[in-house]
Length: 345
Ligand SMILES: NC(=O)c1ccc[n+]([C@@H]2O[C@H](COP(=O)([O-])OP(=O)(O)OC[C@H]3O[C@@H](n4cnc5c(N)ncnc54)[C@H](OP(=O)(O)O)[C@@H]3O)[C@@H](O)[C@H]2O)c1
Image (tube, rainbow, N blue to C red; front, side, top):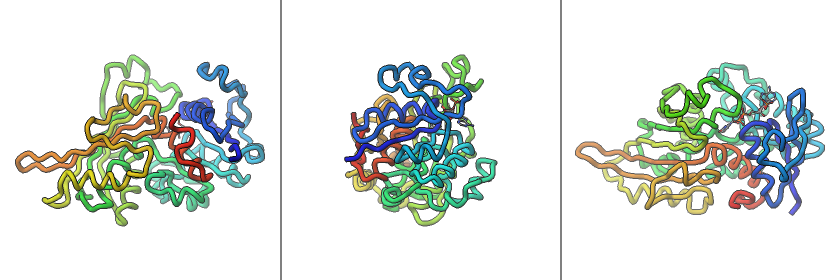
């Protein structure tokens, strides 16, 4: 099989770093072009000493035509709003793109503008973007020139709830997603509220019911159900480097829904999906998925007096299944490779 030549825009950030790391281990891909907007272009192993001896490329300017000439696929690891200007130029130059930002995730441009408080400047490409959650939408991803890599929280949420909606086992008017993420979810750039002294020994909720990932989660669940679904999403900041755990509270649709029905829905949905691990005899834990592309899922049916609740637990590494690993998984699907290539080593 031909070796894919890859470009990374934003290689000096966390998702960029992990893409480099994963692509260096990929049997059919190589890191060919690292694109940065800095005035002084860094050598990547000087920026990330962990890459010493593995990748010594010096970053080059972001030049869409040069990237298209040299590469088969480009990964945009840039902040939203910045991403869409470069993605449009890359597509016009003729290279396929996996965008890790939020710019192409919401298919409704007006919704994007209200959630992200900025104009969407690339509505044409938005119309053709595939939402890159391979466990649910692999057919769309295969032929796409532009794949919108899902958000980290939305990945764990969608994988945890979609099978139960597909089987009509839960009341879709009552979905509460309680989530916690490590601080790398906010990126590498310095932010005062993420200093060690602010985060260490702290634990708190933020953006309750108004986080930008809530509409993205609702969009996926609505697509699975075929009609609008709303969810309450409550994120928390965990004082760890990386990892997401979501505890999702749901109501069974009917009184005769059993725990066997719930597990059967997950087994059916994910039996042939290599990156979803169903945890029947252990609880999903951020430590068990660290540095991996796995999403670990468990489900419980709690029955106490009048209370009957379905509780789903979903854990992933925000930088791998929630970002760079999923981006490689999408590349594998786009180019007809084994979905797991480079991701199980
Ligand atoms: N972190 C996660 O867990 C995660 C998960 C899923 C999705 N994402 C999304 O993935 C994207 C990248 O996230 P990240 O965590 O890697 O962020 P990050 O660590 O802050 O890195 C951002 C990268 O973008 C570059 N950049 C920033 N502003 C730029 C501009 N105006 N022009 C060109 N390059 C610019 C930075 O370059 P400099 O080094 O020069 O500043 C850096 O390389 C974001 O859209 C984020 O929302 C992140």
